[in-house]
Amino acid sequence: MRIHYLQHVAFENLAAIEPWAKTGRHRLSVTRFHENDSLPPMDVFDWLIVLGGPMNVYEEDKYFWLTDEKRFIEKAVRQGKRVLGICLGAQLIAAVLGARVRRNPEKEIGWFPVERVETRRETELFESLPRTFLAFHWHGDTFDLPAGAVHTARSEGCDCQAFIYTDRVVALQFHLETTRESVEKLIHHCAGDMTEGKFVQRPEEMIASDERFDEAHRLMEVLLGQMERDGE
Image (cartoon, rainbow, N blue to C red):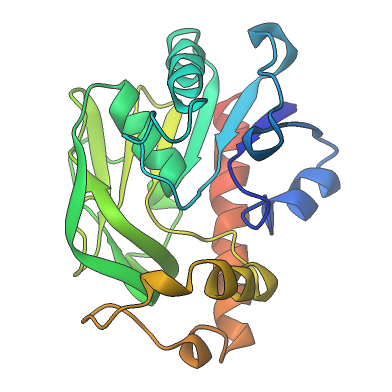
C-alpha cells in the first residue's frame, strides 16, 4: 500500500509507525510542511496519515500552509482514501468535516487511560482494542464530534478522544505511535506546555516505563493492521 504522511514539525514524525510500514513493505512518501514541501497529486497514494504538531488548526495566519492542508485532507476524504489523523491530525480531520475545534477544559500531557465508547455502530476496528488502555497524550485542544461520525473513545480529561467517519477515516486525539525518543523531543521543544494540571505529568513520569511504550506500539500495530485489512 502507498502511504503518504503529512509532517508539521521535525520533532513529530511517524515514530513507531515507520518500522511497521517498512516491515509490511508499504511505500512511504512525505510532505514536510516545516521544510515547505509541496503536496502530491491524489493518485500517488492510497492511505493518508496526518501527524501531530504544536500549532492549532485555526492559526492559518501564522502557518500559511494550514489552509492548503485542510483542502488536501478534505479532498482525500471525499475521494474515499484511507485517512488516519493523530492529535493535531485528528483535529484537522474534525475541522474539515465541519466540527468545532476548541480549547479542552484540561490539558492532557502524559500517560492516561483511554476508554472505548460503546455504541450500536461500534466498528470492528475499535473492537480489536481493549476496553480500556493506556495512551500517551500531548494536547490542549479538543474537537466536537463531526456530523455522521461515530464516537469511539474518551478519557477522564477529554470526552472526544477518537472517532471514525465512513469507516475509512480514523481520528485519534491520543498517541500510540510515540517512542521514548519522540517524548524526549516533545519535552525539549514544548516545555512551555507543561503547566500545572490534573492531567499533566512530570517529564520523568512520561519516560519512566519502557513497558508503556511497548504496549502502546502493540496496540498501534493492531489498529494499523485492521485499517490495512479494511482498506483492501
